[in-house]
Length: 444
Image 1 (cartoon, helix red, strand yellow):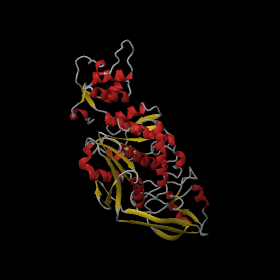
Image 2: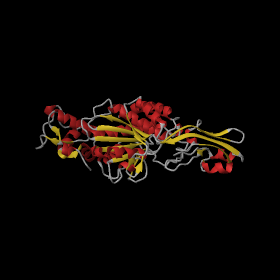
Image 3: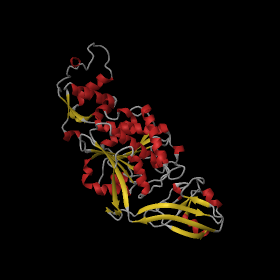
Image 4: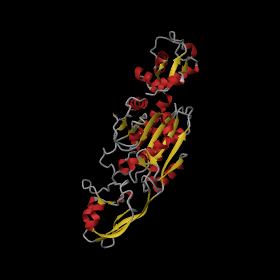
């Protein structure tokens, strides 16, 4: 099986340190759905894995949408009547509402206040706000700071540009023995928010880096794109090829202390849904399964009815279900290294099972073949067979071309690893062969 080096939690803890380092590097970058922040983020990821970058011009039609103008910002601040900067983008990238249009003005507090966003229920946190598709401007600050503002004239500066440019996304492709693809998607548009989604970017990068060192069956396509509009653009550009996708995952929010949560695909019973459910059940950690809904991240687009791809979503606490979501409190304090490691291990388990989950034909189907003479079964009788010997018997019995290895593991109660090892051993002694390709690929 692939990704053996990520099957132990201890090994994944070491990788969590690498994820943390990448997150620290990416945290200060002012990202949005377009612009230099996305490119700087991809530059950092591209130092760890090979990326093919795509630039799609503003105004390009993509289904019912079009690629927006490109947004970049150099500085943004608010000065009070005494010349003190009470809000400054340099202090935190959440201080500026994303996609704010440029402005230089002096305004009385009464005119400025409608452009100031805060969280009264969490008065020390800075909210995350955007205005992608309506030209507007605004600042975000802690409610406690907002309450301290005195009447008077305030100088406002937003040195930004909103003009024709490009939307940028990048892909890392790990070739497999088959052109059938496993698609892994993560969003790269959020600014200084750790769980959402520096954890997704970091773990996706590490997973790709390890797969590049293996020889998988599937071709793995890792897509780093801005949320929503990025997946819409990717689908518009790849519509002719999405029939290659046999499994898919959207990754994000993978570092908090909540249970690992898998959201089923729109199909509900696609192979990826069964594989993820098995991996979570056998993972030895707190987990939960939730049904598909058309709210969330890029699974909404990938599972839209015109595509209906077999793509699920893996998070810990889902979007909008933890109090720090979309605020400055989504920082390194809510990310746990052990939880990162556990999430990486779960991703690796799902990928490993999917890549190995083939169907087989028993080449000696009339009664049990003699396994002892082939060195696969103990020659001294009377003792209860162990897990591996049980797995040999189960794989032989179920391998009529209709049952996958996951089917065997679920029905027998044996671990998938034992079942896969038994299948390998039986192939090595010419008692088993893969089913025909038409049988081995599920379209469920």
